[in-house]
Length: 137
Ligand code: HEM
Image (tube, rainbow, N blue to C red; front, side, top):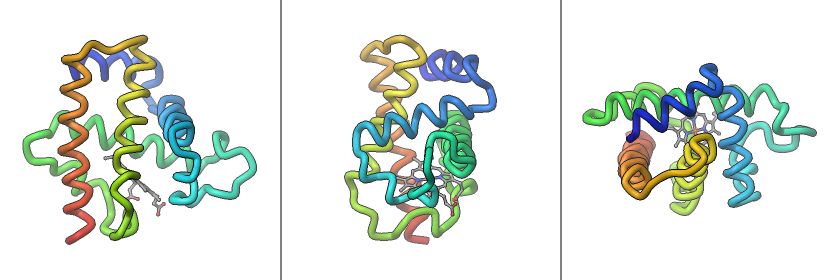
């Protein structure tokens, strides 16, 4: 389920640039204030921003690797810096990003069944814990 839905997402754009932009669109649709957490805030057309595109690709890459390496979650730890996000970042931002990631996978797959949604929700909860642990290192 996970691999199939991710393969579809990757088949749309294997550089992850356009799906990374879609992820940010979803995130800022869910919560427009989240833009203030990112260095591209204030740019005129953020969806054309090189910085947004770069981070979008990095997040997608990180999710791809997290699925492959779900047992140890080494990917999240290896791929994000300790200063990746503020240590005191409010919990609800993690949930916004998680929602936006699953929404993006669902959109490119034109739907998602309950089992696949459950599997992605589980994966994201592990990713989230790893991100938080990384922050505390
Ligand atoms: C919880 C909300 C999140 C916030 C506020 C956030 C914030 C950021 C920011 C500000 C950057 C750019 C850092 C810079 O250019 O100096 C970044 C980069 C990055 N993000 Fe996130 N991010 C979040 C969630 C995620 C998730 C879920 C993943 C995927 C596992 C992820 C993976 C990455 C990666 C791999 C980079 C590039 C490496 C790094 O700067 O550490 N992020 N993120």
